[in-house]
Image 1 (cartoon, rainbow, N blue to C red):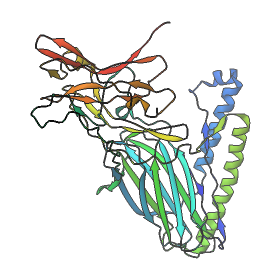
Image 2 (tube, rainbow, N blue to C red):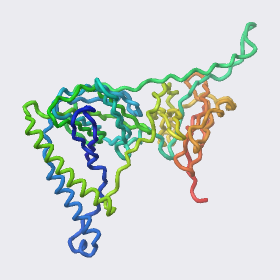
Image 3 (spheres, rainbow, N blue to C red):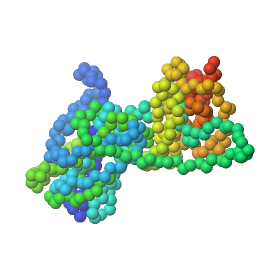
Image 4 (cartoon, rainbow, N blue to C red):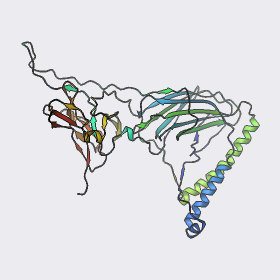
Length: 423
């Protein structure tokens, strides 16, 4: 799918704007034999429409724009929500410029993109839209039925009796520290991939003028973010800037733009007919969630089992605002079955009351409170505060973290979601 966005080059310049060409999703289906299509008129119409679409795409005039700059960037963290920000200098080119951005890697990503174009004169122009369908982010969000050990917001040791004559009679209440946020960033890669296992198109912007005057220098700012974190392991964001070759004449450029305009009118007429008949639907690329705050710095607690993996926290958007969901350790069920979780030489103290912690704003109307628990750090038990979490479905209930007595002490049983079947 190709997204072409209308962008103005200069308020006082004559320009040709490209409209959104392919904001359509073709209603495809399995191939059928001619006899089956004859028996199903709708199938025959869909097949004819698909053939017409392919014919139109083949007849599109070849673009004379060539790649002038190409760069790649990757996130520093595996699970990334953004916002990521890139500043890009426009090309000092005649006739036209094109900016193409896509994600290249082993899995699909999705989110929102905002491009701000600022010239020496005139107001900044902003275009934002969503991209992708659903990302492959299972490694970055909690899956139904898995065991979870949360990160402590402020792990405190188990109480010990005061010693000595000068011991205080009461412990001073801890002052809650403001959470530290770490701005996410992208770093340039030395080798930009030329082939993509999976390519997730983010944006394709063209803007041009008909009079041959060089386009004004502009400062381009690209911002990327997502409501849920993407799994960015091995993913490279590729930025390509294209323009006509330096030897291109005004006559050649004018002939190309005329051919492109005639082709666009034919394609638009076909697209409008597809929408009218219902064989295609318009894509909704409206951005519904603003850029999230920077992710919070988290200190993972002691690993709960031999093969547990850390899943960082992220911002959850609901009710017009963002709420922080703390990170957790993902504990394989096999570790629990094989007794590979943390062991302590004795059972933990009784659970602490958490009246103040439960007064924290819930991140969602569906959120449930998951109580705190004691964690063994190898020398002493430390308390991990409870947290609000969002269940995978309305049938899921939270099973708290607990300790099971053993002949040599106690063993950790991480909490997790349990699903109810039947009534």
